[in-house]
Amino acid sequence: MSSSDADPRRDFVRAIVADDVSAGKHGGRVQTRFPPEPNGYLHVGHAKSICLNFGIAQEFGGQCNLRFDDTNPEKESEEYVRSILEDVRWLGFQWSGLFYASDYFERLYGFAVKLIEDGKAFVDECSADEIRRMRGTLTQPGQGSPWRDRPVAENLDLFRRMRAGEFPDGSIVLRAKIDMASPNLNLRDPVLYRIRRAHHHRTGDAWCIYPTYDYAHGQSDAIEEVTHSICTLEFENHRPLYEWFLREIGLFPSRQIEFARLNLTYTVMSKRKLLQLVQSRVVSGWDDPRMPTIRGLRRRGYTPEALRAFCAEIGVSKFESVIDHVRLENALREDLNKRAPRRMAVLRPLKVVIENWPAGHVEWLDAVNNPEDPSAGTRKVPFAGELYLERDDFQEDPPKKFFRLAPGREVRLRWAYFITCTGVVKNAEGQIDELRCTYDPATKGGDSPDGRKVKATLHWVSAPHALTAEVRLYDHLFGVEFPEQGTDDFTTNLNPSSLEIVRDAKLEPSLAEAEIGVGYQFERQGYFCLDSGDADPRAKRFVFNRSVSLKDSWAKAQKGEG
Ligand code: ATP
Ligand code: MG
Image (cartoon, rainbow, N blue to C red; front, side, top):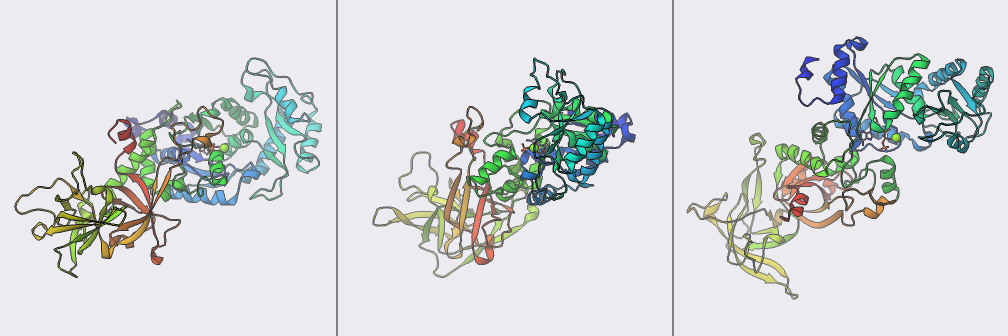
């Protein structure tokens, strides 16, 4: 395919696909699949696989299936299936075929019968422990099972009775007969079927034997005539087995290609570990905004565009690496900087009274919605005699490099006026309760006709018009870059201050119309969105999540600039 030949960002997977297409393999047809096991919610690692599989299908005019690898009934559920369907769609992809490995149970069983008939599989009565012990090691060959040379007729009979439920769980298994001396342990007579009386979320109690992942996966690919079966690197040394099954059963020759999985700093990514966090209530659920799940990122304020851009930016390679979390955040900043409307919100309010403001007067000032996007227009923000400023933006006794508000000093209020601080009102404990200021009517809109300069422009919110909100400020879920390193228990590395709740933030009134999940830039603070779980704007319950700060405060702190 010449168009992608020209793409300098083409990775090795796309190069393989392009070569196969130009060689006319499978008539130039490209069929991929995304094959999640419905045993948890999808995470950003899955997003990488989704973007790769669906992306390749799109680029090469092919198709991508969504296939549930549902061969472990105890851990799987309909809830997970539903969430995966939603998350793939939310990311912006539409599958051609929707399949379940469990749809193929009858055919997979038939393939196993064929292997038995051909003398390539046998029923083994050894226990799981014995099988493990006889498997050998990387340096020592394994030992064949004493049941390895059971006659075909006996194997067929036993396998049929396994299915019929005549044997207890785990008592016997069906194994392939390959090579107990193979240097590749996966080829040492791998198990194909085990007996497990487990209720399956789709097939119910129809089966008491279930195929192993290795046995089910490749055959499911072949049934769907998947041309390129893209998986993560840990399956590289399963590839000879994958190919053995397809060849010996005589199925469509799907091609397995392995790439390095996504790892991110400051988080863990396996569904098993994420489930542990959910079950131990370290997080509020799979969609906790600190989770690396697609649900969590979405609730946090991530957009499908940002996640897709991130996946494109990190690329695909054959080498394991850990991606800096900052790159995920930057993808969101870049996306929201272009399109998020700007708003004013004061997280830690300090009341200001403008002494020379005409009593009862309210002005509605023009504020630009997005300086990066003129088509976003303007909105009106109210200005009355009382407003809120950020506590941090005032110091009674300012140090040298503090240029914001202080007694006697003049600053600009964004979109409004210059104000000068004339006094401080304190409570009985000596804490500052309120500021007194005057404004200069000639500076309306934020410029002084006499060319007077001020060193700071502050965001503010009109006190009588403000919405009160809860704002949730998130930090990394883990306090260290590599939570799994040097410990048996990654939860010891949790960051105790990964969530800070600000309960009395003041927002400009236009935010009453904020839609759940839509990103806003709170000027000088970062990007925020209305929480999908706990906000209820109609009941005046405003809960905003900080999606990402404006700048990468971590990198700055590490360089000593924070
Ligand atoms: P987990 O350990 O998180 O459960 P998994 O690989 O067992 O991951 P599956 O549901 O089997 O999860 O994965 C579906 C697809 O997503 C597979 O093709 C898998 O290789 C891919 N995938 C899973 N995790 C990652 C990751 N971190 N980076 C890239 N691809 C991934
Ligand atoms: Mg898995």
